[in-house]
Image 1 (cartoon, rainbow, N blue to C red):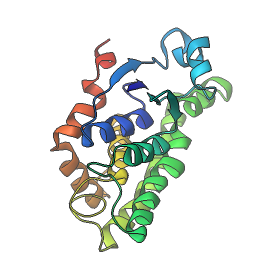
Image 2: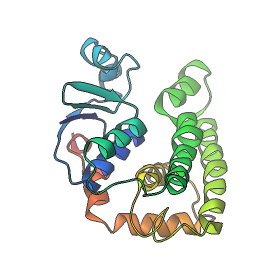
Image 3: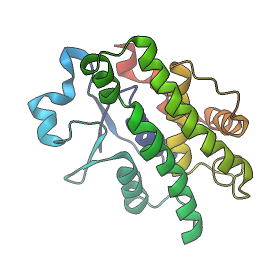
Image 4: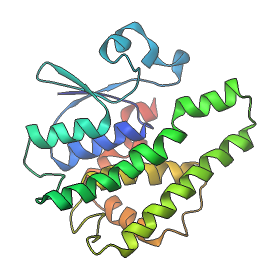
Length: 215
């Protein structure tokens, strides 16, 4: 199993967390998204994923893209230590929380969007950071309301063990901190973040602990 990843990619981090939680071994292949104009635009990686995005997971002759699809593949292909709950309603809730991050928060603040703002629209660094913080605050505020009021929330986003939702939440919190977002209004999210950070799987997958982070 081979994971094409970049240490600061939220999407790649989700898959690293999932692999660690499921105790699956893999080879990590670094794809630097900035060096040399972006290694994801090279011919070899473009052939692997025409969208020119990480992560890509190679397993059993298949090259899989899109982090949530990859994680659900891992749950189906390697059912031990599942990342989705037992019932249809519970699985729908976990997917809903994950999609609120992966579809509503993350895309607006992805690297290619920030580059477009800076290079094509010529916004100032201050304006770019204000854009980032606006969409983070809007998304996390809604997520905080759900997690705080819904009875299915436990030590983690759903119950007492990490799920697909936590795989998505933790990288987003990391990025929010990196951009100086105020997280004080989200005590439930911070509590879950603390519970995640205490687990070795999340520690191993952390962006700052990846080999390409040091490089």
